[in-house]
Image 1 (spheres, helix red, strand yellow):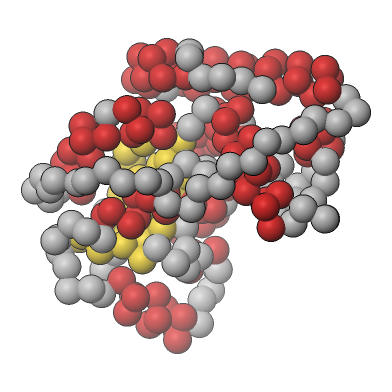
Image 2 (cartoon, rainbow, N blue to C red; image 1 turned 45 degrees about the horizontal axis):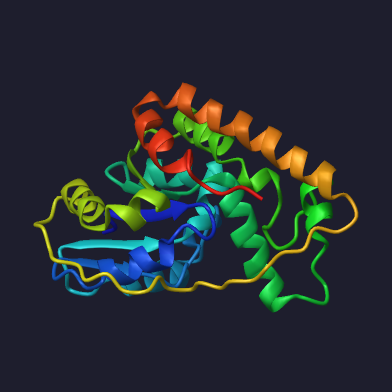
Length: 239
């Protein structure tokens, strides 16, 4: 049995959310990003291991693999095999996502990572980091058109400001009683200043133009998010 899966964009608090879900007396979450649904035909042993890791003796069981959001085939397989599945989708302002994800990769691969300008202007994909992968509106639209499961979108900016309120929405969505969550520092966070190199104005203009188009797409296709986006993304500091 699996009841929910946390999917979403990188650096959008999925680690923090999975950590706290495990504190709830009726919810378990495998936070190791098993990636089980990435395989079309997993081996029998993989299936046994996957469901065994979910079994914590709690009522509601789930896992966290954010990367599923980029794999429509994976989401379709989940829909077919687990029709009752629920998705928690984590999201944040695309420009902040880009900066945070680049910083995250830079911390581990400083000597080999492409320049920030190359990532933005040439859409180089470095271990999942690419400019295209930060276009949250485009990816959310693909999900809307291809996924029929119940889903709850969690905006990182709203989560940081209305912490308890967002948790109550999560608990209601999963069908469990409310539970008091004590806010701590986010998990898996790195901070680093990013230097733009040769094409600073071209890079800056490209980011602003494409991300503003992407946000407009999100507002148009998901009008239920319009107020949240206007409230929490209008004040976000860009590059």
